[in-house]
Length: 396
Image 1 (cartoon, rainbow, N blue to C red):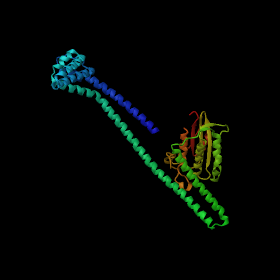
Image 2: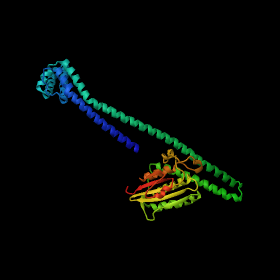
Image 3: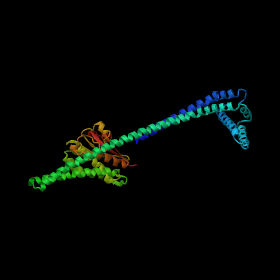
Image 4: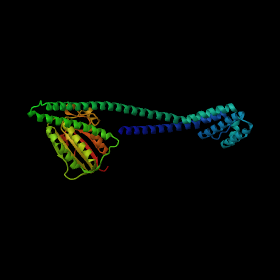
């Protein structure tokens, strides 16, 4: 959206500059015609006549008069006599509008000089409209050029998106194939009676874990596709965001402990209502916590906070793990992009943050990554290496 906003401002500036330049050019050309070219031409063709309208307005009237005179002279040579009277009447009316004295003067020029005068006056008129034609061509070229740039950028984005999508599908297929192979091997071993009694529980737990991982991947891919579908709509109601965040933290507390991490939660005790889809927004919080678990080492501290400032709420999921490189941080919310390269070992799909951003923006909220965070009213976040912050304006 920012790109189109910038383009709009750029085209408006170019248009205003073009209008100013055309106005300056028109003023200069008008002054030149009024003070030099038109009087010179009139005195050249009518050296002894007193032309009353030596101006651009007079030039236009003179052009009309000369054109009618030339046109009527030509037609009178080829038309029947019955139409000559009508043509003469039309010429007399135009000459009368220009002035009775000028009628006699122009008639004395002769057809050759009348044609020459017509060409000169036509050149003057072309000179007047030239700035507008040049400005129109110039501005249209700017618009065409910018449109081509946008089309090229869109095609490049589509190409990159297709490449990333194919890579993602390949990675997910790999992630699905690996646990499926394990499950198939363990199941066959159990079915063939090749597993001792003391190992059966271990094999069954491994099958359950791998099945859960496959289910998570399929659900994540389903969520991503569903959010992009035309018929998808948020089911928004007034929800207690404090209770929702606490529920999300409680649901993943065991995963945090199993990963050898600590969770620090600071949520207001009072009820704070937010107009949101509870299921989808809760999934955003869960995705952010899962992201912190998967992409940090044991011993990492995870912070979950809700800050209230007037009509603005800030939901923060922070951690003191490894800082994300800038080249990754700039496009971290793009689909199929992850903060580290160890997706095989940590099971990332590159879709979690993209889904979170999509859901947040569908609500009209904002989400961003802040590294080395610092909030003066809440100094506790400065203990963390990075944080994902969701900003909710309850007035919107």
